[in-house]
Length: 178
Ligand SMILES: [Zn+2]
Image 1 (tube, rainbow, N blue to C red):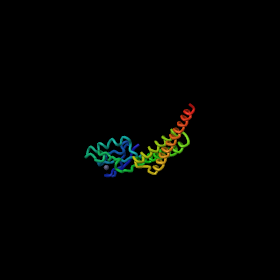
Image 2: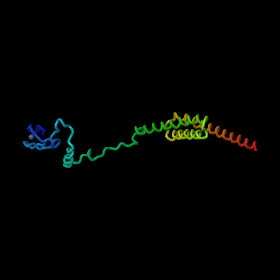
Image 3: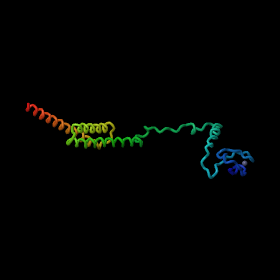
Image 4: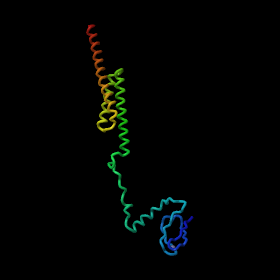
């Protein structure tokens, strides 16, 4: 299989092998340098095509486009990169989860397992508030986090009070029986 082309200088029809596509050849009739095109059916340059580019570049001055690396895009270039937006969304989701858990657990702690659940609610609420203060995101969850924390503290006080009262009654009962 071969490529047919016309010499741009003398209009002579030339026939070259397909593997010469992308390379330069000398016209046998007029000695003009002819750029051999790729065959119409295969537009993609073959893998060995870039091999002749360095030889062309070495003859003249080195092309700045080939030697200079592409300018790296700095992360500090814009303060709202997609990665940062994703990170903030993730953090906001975390804060939302912490604040909601704090409130729900705080309410549940009034009814059962208060000694365990109330400190958990306080911890979760506190963590959510700290994340909001540190990163400046999820301010709309600060109310929920605060409520959860306060409810947790109230619940803990009540639970500790109930336990103390219960112990006092038991001890009182034991003492009364003695
Ligand atoms: Zn020619």
